[in-house]
Image (tube, rainbow, N blue to C red; front, side, top):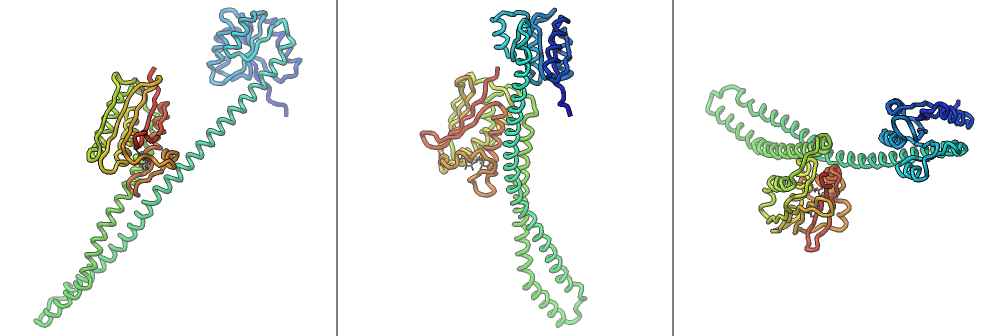
Amino acid sequence: MDPKPYSFLHVEDDPLDAEYVQTQLAESGIPCEVTRVETREDFRRALEEDSPDLILCDYNLHGFDGLEALQIAQNAPQHVPFIFLSGGIGEHLAVECLHRGATDYVLKGNPARLIPAVKRALEEARVRRAKEQAEHDLAHGEKMVLLGQLSAGIAHEINNPITYINLNMETLKDYSEKIREIFLSGTSFITQGDPETPEEVVRQFEGVRSWLRTNGRLVLMLLEDLGRLAQETLDGGHRVADITQRLRRFSRQERQEPVEIDLEECMETALKIGWNEIKAKCTVRKNFASPQPRVKGHPNQLTQVLLNLVLNAAQAITGCGAIELGIKERDGKAVLTVQDSGRGIKPEDVAKMFTPFFTTKASGEGTGLGLYVSRGIVEGHGGTIRAENSPEGGARFTIELPLAS
Ligand SMILES: Nc1ncnc2c1ncn2[C@@H]1O[C@H](COP(=O)(O)OP(=O)(O)OP(=O)(O)O)[C@@H](O)[C@H]1O
Ligand SMILES: [Mg+2]
């Protein structure tokens, strides 16, 4: 089967020149279909309707020039190799064309150069597509690996509470059956009929007492256990809800329009929300530059990031300590810091802290999603987040965000 012919777009307003190029192409044996356009509008339309494999463009056109055509081609969603054909544009302009991204230029007076230039441009485009595909596959592969890690983490984290929720529910079902049996056996005394003699009264009373001795403590134990099981089940449910809520918020993050962020306000809100946990053990120092750097993005998400950082800081402090918050502008970036006087980060944990579900907190206290989600949010803002131990001891987290233009 013949290979699909290339599609060439030829921008040329001189019919003789156009015919000459077509003849050269036909004689070269390159399988191609050539569409000729003359005006800016037709050129635009042809680019929109079909993505050509190559553009051949005369430099001097009626009503628009080659450089403008080059710019229009560069705005197309796909890269298309672009060769200038010219009766003589001078070396200076030729260099300028290449500088602006043209693939090549060929003097009309030197037709022997045309076919090699076309072949080279097609080959370069093929290599470029292959490279883009490879990069895309690699990025996709990395995403899939991350997705795999995340799913495995979520499955593990959710599986644990779900397992004990299910076990507890089984036990609750057993307990309800037991309590029903005990209740029925207890009511049998009442349904036995009224005692008629004092001896019968005594016998019935003895029966009730012995029933109570056997079953009373059991009922009490069952009831106490019921409360514990219900609380544990509720905790498990909350934990699952917490994980799913965080991930939902995370996946929603890119859908809202970015707005100008009041960084100070975000810091203050995070402090306010976390105050209960912070106030007991930390003094808070603030180092906010004025005027504050201008940043665009999603204030709620950034507050969520800062809240996790201040809570982590407070949780890293045993006894009494301090948290220092900073906002400043440095090297054309907004820099936010959260530093604490806590136990610091173990060297072996620095690399793991931002991976999903890494936590050193007791089971039920941390999901290990805080920093993972935070990094996603900060990178979604075009920024970076890093962790290190400060020279004074304790951990320091630094967020750098691009300034609003
Ligand atoms: N300021 C800090 N000092 C020392 N270690 C820290 C600090 N901040 C985070 N870490 C370590 O990084 C781990 C991961 O933090 P991250 O915020 O991702 O999860 P978490 O706080 O454990 O749980 P979550 O935030 O989901 O409730 C923590 O468990 C802790 O070991
Ligand atoms: Mg945390």
